[in-house]
Length: 285
Ligand code: SF4
Ligand code: SF4
Image (cartoon, rainbow, N blue to C red):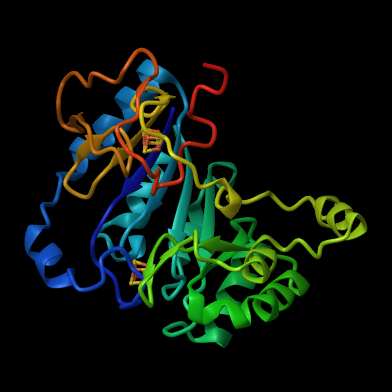
């Protein structure tokens, strides 16, 4: 199985495009900490019932979560983990003790808040330690003009850089549908010649999970989808939902039994905002 786990609502940045922009105070008040042992127990049960899972952890900023490194070191003995971080905090202990085949860090570059030199230094160090390959930047409309420069700088340093499409409203326009053809070309990096792509593969850099094509926005309502069966979304309070868009409640990580679906079910949403439909929709129905 695969999980998106939003582990906290705490962040040291305040990006205007954040899902949580304008709601930080309210979210802070709603925080409910799950006991550490309850979390470990849940992931052990997942391992026993479904075998090794892939867990993509984001927040907030995950490294602000109490005992985060300890938690990751324990869970990664059983499962494969990808941590999405703004890389403002250097994960010393993770570098020292991580079981590296099972932990990967995905650095998200936020130009309005990140200190570029510090970000670059941390990223290089983590790459040299076998923990980081992918750097992403959100293609928020004001950032598009810089995306090609970012791509060049990070690619030259040996990273796999991808621009993630923005889902939401900017300047009264709805995205990603409002990207111009030129903006789409920049985001999707369509200038890559076949030769460049081959070189990229030859570098043996792991491809990102997050370089979803912006051309693929489509209506998913009533389509059969494996979200809730092969995939689930876990929120900060331990509640488990089918996915981050179709918030159909499945259970709580501290429940004895969690009734994941045994088959694909119909999606209730017109726009798959979590962009998880790829790989989960039943293609040939
Ligand atoms: S770093 Fe991420 S979680 Fe923090 S404010 Fe920016 S987008 Fe939101
Ligand atoms: S298509 Fe997207 S929104 Fe619909 S159930 Fe699947 S993952 Fe969720």
